[in-house]
Image 1: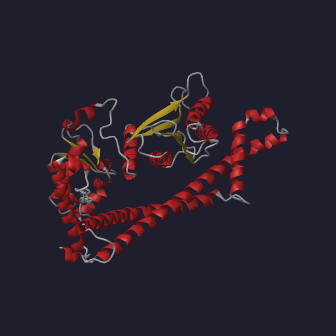
Image 2: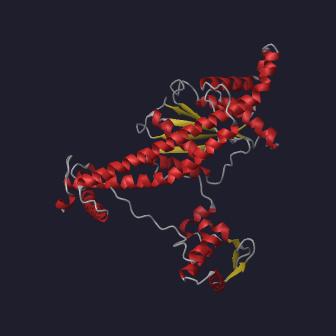
Image 3: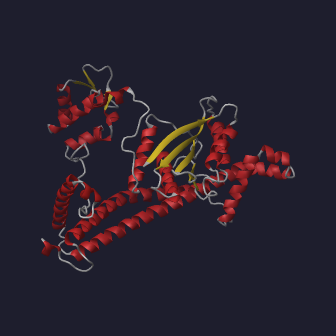
Amino acid sequence: MAVTRLMPLKIRRGKSIKQTIFDSMNYGKDPNKTKDGELITSYGCNTSIAQHEFLLSKKIYTETTGREQKKDKDVLLYQIRQSFKPGEITPDEANRISYDLAQSFTKGRHAYIVATHSDKNHIHSHIYFNAISLDCSKKFKNFWGSAKALRRISDILCVENGLSIVENPQKKGKHYGEWLGDKRPASWRDKLKQAIDSALDGKPADFESFLKTMETAGYEIKQGKHLAFKAKEQERFIRLRSLGADYAQDEIMDYIKGRKVKIITPQKAPKFNLIINVQNSIKAKNSPGYGQWAKIHNLKEAAKSLVFLQENHLTDYAVLEEKTQQATQRFNQISDDIKAAEKRMREISELQKQISNYRRTRDIYVQYQKSGYSKKFKAENEGALILHKAAKDAFNALKLKTLPKINDLKQEYAALLADKKKHYSEYRDAKEQMQELVTVKHNIDRLLNTSQGEKEIGKAR
């Protein structure tokens, strides 16, 4: 179980921008709570000087865009808290999951640090992400329903990592649409989608026939750059493209011409479930009803598993074992390739950041040298000088003789991103195939009570 909370942090009363950022992040980075900093990770920034980098990005954003908000409305950074159920997770695992949460929620567009606290019974993470994007061109938009989206990402990560989730999360309140619940009347958009589906079910001969069917259904049609529809009682037209990709004009035309089978994504077939060990189940011993349900469940899953084997001509146990091993190896290889690409992309992002920091602070460092390393000059430009030193330390650590060109790094990043996207579709297929085969093999092992060695599944039927 993990509980999440999203908090925008604005300038505190009586504090400066710098004090607000430093006070907030220093609490999260407290060495007494993070095992002397071992439980702090970061993306797009350096954990030791993240505050300075956040400050510099805000200055660059203001200078380059000319946008500046009032103090009481200016969000400097956002904090996410993710708290886990006591005894369910280790601090290192919590930090990893919180890092993935931050990466998914920010889509990798904002720098952040993840500080996991292990000083209390409930392990929890403080995630601080910069309100300014990595390229300093825009700010994070705290969209409507962001807390719900955050909780959903957290729940998915928890399930993937075998953790429990909050079954019925409490809400602070409901807006009118939520309060109406299932009784909420269908919107004009919903009605238009239903009308389009109904018209297409009639298999119109061409697009003109489709439009005539929509007119017969009571819709006024406006053609031009954007095709739009309006019911009799409506005040405004609804553009077709605003209904989603599946209802775009090109998609509908493809459907009519037979190039597209359905405009609505069909539900996935039910996944295989593991057979339950009824004999050793504590629940079955304490509840006769559960035991009976488990037996029926096992019969259904056994039947599904055997049908799967027949349809895929897997009548030999050794072949099933080999296929399962191959599917697992394929999934692991694709997963490793994606992780390697992500690692290199993080390295490129960090290097770009350091090159940018170095160039922006180089003139200040030169002035610092000319001042004879004046203490006064250092105090006035402390943040820029710290970033300059950090950039040079990073170059020295990488043993760079010359700095790579930003354009070359961008091209490499784009190639890795394209390759990663390509791998993701393979990743999903490989994961599904592996899970299917592993589950079926487990069920067959339970059914046959197998030991290692070749067995013909057909003989057991």
